[in-house]
Length: 582
Image (tube, rainbow, N blue to C red; front, side, top):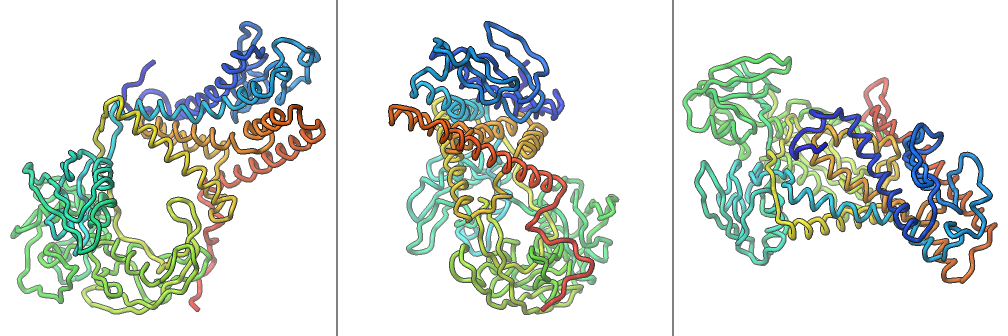
């Protein structure tokens, strides 16, 4: 049965069935690689199994038992003359000098048979990604969700909600197009075209003297994620508060027009002398208020207070403190110890006015010099906040803690101990189809990037620069990842399928005895020496490798369970009393 692209997997087959299908297909193709090459070299195959352990059911064709076994944690091909997964002992006939015996084939043929499984997993993503790009993979629409203050984008006149339709000489539909166009652009002056209210506007982004423009959208002040419509009302005397709105309300409509982002809210309220606002409160109840400006309300205004705040007293909750927490090691954080409170509106941190939450991150990050991989000490910093209409200045020193970045590497970062009150939304996805040749090229780039990234991560784990618990997953994590992907639709499932295939290929090529990579090394050594390694050496290597893999499987399975139930050894235990400040 064919599933139309764009159809949710859960709308046809249950996610559980799709999860089993994704993982089962990976195992089938991996073992199929071994099987096909073995048959090409004339090796007789006795068993082709999906799963390991006791046989559940199957069919025998041409001397091969195609079966499904009890434990769904992998699979195997049992050929004549090699029986690493035997459940009934080694047959004597396997070891005679037979034409179809694996053990009597030249070392280079055995090497290729063993390598065929992981190589199949490494090549498969090329076809999967090519199909995705030809069909039109959903990608985030090139809609501006954030414009940083005092950047090239703001100076050029880019506004939140603009759609970027051209960068340089390249037409752009999605943010992927924008990133690629920026990456290849050279120079200090970048012409772009944005679409605003159905009209295409040519704009020019100009870099500072001596700086190169391009490469990353963030260097231009452009962001794809947008603040949601959750509000912070920091002054009880404001029109919004007196109209009946409260902190944490989510605006749904302004004068009957649906709003999705804070930029939508600001545009709908701009220039109006009154507005009907439909919102949802923290209890989930929907209500409507009529906003009216109040000329007598004239509080102290800061640079970060835009016209929406100055007129109505409304600001995005993403520039407020939504939750305060302790440090990962269980100590009290600076936010807990120096007087910050949930609901505080952030106006200025250090020397930086707070227009977006990214300004907070930059200001706090600047308190530490040196590389993120080096532990240092943070300098004290002032927080200027508005609380219930009163402006307060609080001085505190960030704590430098060990964390992991988005690539799973250990870093040292300054932490205050709070998160924003609102959330951030990615742009809506649109299909982005490519021609076959372009799709194949992109598939190669994607496969190479993911594969090299995985190899680098393995290197970081070996050197201790990345935590093992956050970078390795066992069967439980694989099935959980596949389940989540199946729930999100065929495109996400296909992408995760390709990534899991690469993982399986890379892991199996590691030179660990009992893995394909370990056997490849063994047969390569035999090929070069002209004779096999001593039987006792091979036996010891197999025993050590098997013990290592069983131990690792048990450990990562515990980590997998901890991830599912929400526990993490790196997270602080729940304390009976609030942590104390030093």
